[in-house]
Length: 82
Image 1 (cartoon, rainbow, N blue to C red):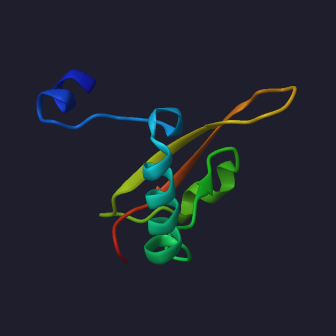
Image 2 (cartoon, rainbow, N blue to C red):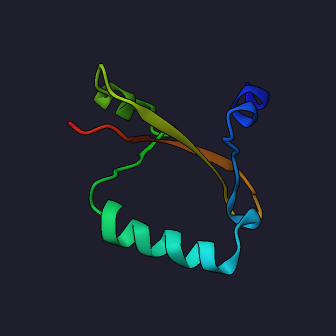
């Protein structure tokens, strides 16, 4: 799947691959355009999955927690308008 994305000029990156300027830009973009519009639903909270809507696009987010347990957590973010 990732090879097909790369063939079309799309690459997946994480925060460790961003330049300082890109981090600043994305942080500002989030606060200017997205803050308050996106509401992550933690997948560890299974009872919240009933809130997903039909005919919407969702983004899956993976986050490795800092600390001793180092658990990986997942969340879903609705990306298409209501």
